[in-house]
Each structure stands twice: as structure tokens, then as C-alpha cells.
Amino acid sequence: MVPIRLSLTVALCCIAIGWSTAQIKYEKEEKTDVEQVPAAAVDFIHAVDSLLVGRWYREISNQGTSYEWKGKINDQCTSIEFDQDGSLQDVEILRKFAKLPLDLMEILQKSLSTRYQRYSVRRCQEQWAGTSVAIKNALIRSSPTDDLSVKYELVVRARHGHKDDTERYELLLKLDGSIVREAMLVRSLSDHMDY
Amino acid sequence: MRVAVSVFFIMILHSGYGQTQLDIGVLPKVVLSTEISDHLSIAGSVQTRLLREGVGQDDSKFEYSLTDLTGIVEYRLRGGTRLAVGYLFRSVKEDIVHRAIQQVSWTRTMSKYRIGHRLRTDQTFAPDGGVSYRLRYRLSVQVPLDGLELDPRELYLKLATEKLHQWSSGDFSTELRVIPALGYYGNDKSKIELGTDARYDSLFSVDDTLTVWGTISYYLRF
Image 1 (cartoon, chains in turn brown, green):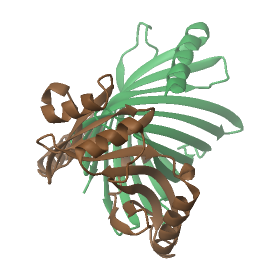
Image 2: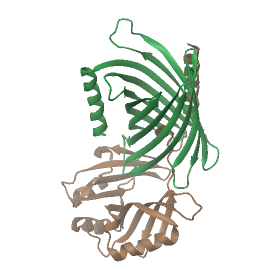
Image 3: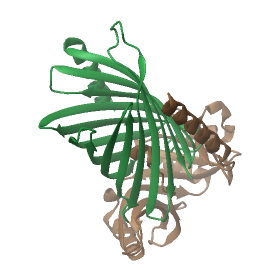
Image 4: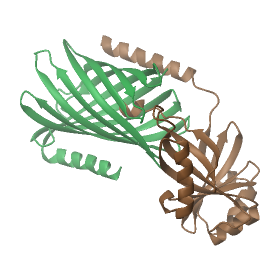
């Protein structure tokens, strides 16, 4: 019985330590009911297509609260982000990187090759920003209009140099290939997958 | 995931037709780990077993089975693949068993799923001097239950399946494990999981055993 008691004591102590060191600041995305979403955001979705089916998420971070609708518009996986008041922020449409127009893909690849010694694109999203009217019209016709700003948000597994670690990065690129933003994604721990 | 669940039910059905013994048990585990450098980390775990053998038999009752103490040193390659070696000290009532462990593991993220691979070999040194060798592969999938990414203070589902091949004293045997668990991701330092670990040994023999463990695992990174 002694090993059992010892193990249980160790387990309880560890659990207590773990809870007590839990961080207060956090960022999370959670599903939310449409009733909790600002009316302006819901109205925008209905204005695009009253029959659209999707899910609402609330994202709470250090920057505040935002709302995101995710669903399919014209058979394309689309997410539309709103701020706390329901004002439209941007739209992101999932694309297959390999199926981008050849000239655009070459520009983006050249930019990535310059920045990284080695990379592989894991996710590609086309991002539209502009007025809510312009975005609504573009969503209905399923292609961006000239009055929208179009960028590409990529998640890549890459390393900068030969001696650097491979990490996951989230990048925002303009159509000319210039990088607006690069953020290294936090490496998730795998102890529960390994042991 | 559907395949793994199907395999599990096939195991249960098969156990009903053959001469399968059903054992049940409890498997509490605590895993502590820390990073020594950007590439090097160490982990230690304590695990005990309470086992009730031969469910349905008159003299069947829960008994303390064993305690495992494990130490692992892990080196993460630049590409993210992890190489590890370890040692397990097992206290089985009056006996002591030693085991050397070597493993390679890697994880990939696909959409909302996190997929982990673990390939492990180990050599177990029994008190009588015998050595048994095992080769095992585990595939695990983690999916958040709320939203598309696993954030702190959220629940997740982890489903793992593992196949083990053992060679001991000229005998070869195969074991299949199905390990579903519900996890709570407290923060980037702590996780707790509740689940079951169904182990079907001697996969291709007549006298086999299905052992269903209730598991509780706590992972603390410091």
C-alpha cells in the first residue's frame, strides 16, 4: 500500500502546484450563440445571404473581444471578423496555395524563399479589407472588387537559416510579395502525446 | 477516429466469442517535465496500477499490481522531431524490473486536429535474467471541443491507438491498445486527462486478455 499512498500524495501535490501557478492572462476562442453577437454583425451576414449557415465564435484576447462568423459562402470556407460593436474588420477565405494564380504564387514563393532558408505552406487565406458595402458586394459576387485591399495570410513551417529551428509562422503578405507582418506561433507542448 | 472506435468494438465483440479473460484496473499517472535548454528537456513520471483480474470470477478483487518510475531525456531536432531515451524502474510486489526505452516522436497540425506519432523500442530485464524486446507505434489525435484551436481552460478529446510487438524467450506476441481520453488544458504548463486504456493482448492467439484501465493522467511542465 505504501507505493500507492506515495503516488497519490505526489499526484495531489502536483495538481495543487499546477492550479496555483495558472496564468491569469489568457487568449481563447469559444463558440457563442447568435443571441450573444452584436446585431450589426448578424445583420451583415443576413445582408450577404439570409440563408447562410455558419458558426459564431467569440475571441477574447489582450486586445479585447471580437466576434467571428465561420461558414461557407459560395462553397468557400469563409470567416468574417467583427469588433466588439459589430463593425466589420475583415474577411478571410481559405484558399489552396497550390491553386493560386501562377503569377501570384510565384511572387509569394519568391518572397518566402528570400525570407526563409526552407519553408512549406500549411494554410493559405485570402484576406479582404475595405468598407462593409464593398466587402458585401465582393462576397455576393465571390471575387474581390477593385476597392478592396487584398492580402494573403499564410501559416508556414519554416526556418530562417540552416542553423535555426523549424517553427510555425503566421505571415501577412501583400500582392507584391512584401511582408506586412510575421509572427511566430507558440510551440505547443507534446508531453501528453509522447508519454 | 471512426476506425479506432470500430477496432475497439471489434475487440470487445471478439472477446465475447473467444476464451478471453477480462481484467479491469485503475491507472493513475503523473508526468513532470522541464526544459533544460531550447533543445533538451527531461521528463519523469510515476504510475501505479490497481488491477482486478478475471472479472466475473468468484475470487476476483482489486489488488495493487505495480508502480513504475520513469525518467526520460529528450532532444528536439531542428525540424521538430523529438528523440528520447529513458529508463523505467518497476516495482512489482517483491520484484524489481528494469527497462531501457528509446523513442522518436513528432507531431503535426492539420486544421483543428493535432496528430502525434510515437515510435518506441524498449528492452525489459526481468528478475530471472530474461530479456524481452518490444517495438511499438502509437498514433494519437487531439481535437479541441470548443473552437478551432485549443486554448487555456478548454476541454479536448484525445484518441490514441497503439500496436505493440513483443519478442520474449523465443515467443512473439502482439498487443493492441485503444486509448480515448477527455483532457482539460489548464494552461501551457498543466493538463489533466481522464479516460480509458483498453489493451487487447495476444491478438492472434486463443487465450487472450482484454484489460480495460480507467486512466487519470496529470502533466505538469515547470
